[in-house]
Amino acid sequence: MTGSYSRSASGSFTITDARYVGGRVAADLRLLYNLYGEPSHERIEKFAEEVALLLRDGYLDTVDYGFRDTATNAWKFRLRYTATAGGQLIDSRPGSFPDPVDLTGYSFHSFLNYSSAFWLLTSSQQTGVKEALPISRTTGTAPSAVAGTSTAGHGYARNGTGVSRDVYVAF
Image 1 (spheres, rainbow, N blue to C red):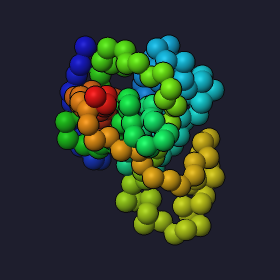
Image 2 (spheres, helix red, strand yellow):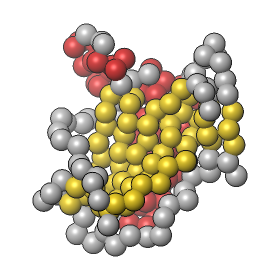
Image 3 (cartoon, helix red, strand yellow):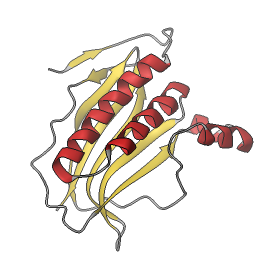
Image 4 (cartoon, one colour):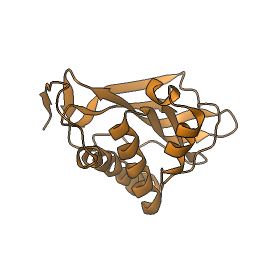
């Protein structure tokens, strides 16, 4: 079942709301684990909390989870979550992936982009935000997603803020 709703910006988005959205992302990641054996349950919980903390504070732009070819740094399968606020938000049921993909030889990878609000913080504030997260990320180049199909229209939201999900599968 899929629903949509609008909410004014006057509502407050709490950590409880953010953890609801993070929990929906975690449900997708658990399905990845069931299908492909990655990421581990411990990492899934950390990814969910990372999404919740960054979303609550407005510091999440996009976060990707999937499997890539390490030699070419290209995605074979990717879930991309883009932070959204206000307007028409979708709160879907987790899952609804395309048919399973052969990911033999591909490694699990995650890549995160911070929002413009994060980049407006001082460097010491940015460091504080990063140190409060359960995941320690390093800088790097985003994997490419050039030749494949992308399916949008799925998302998770609560109290006026959420994420939209895009599923990419390489040809």
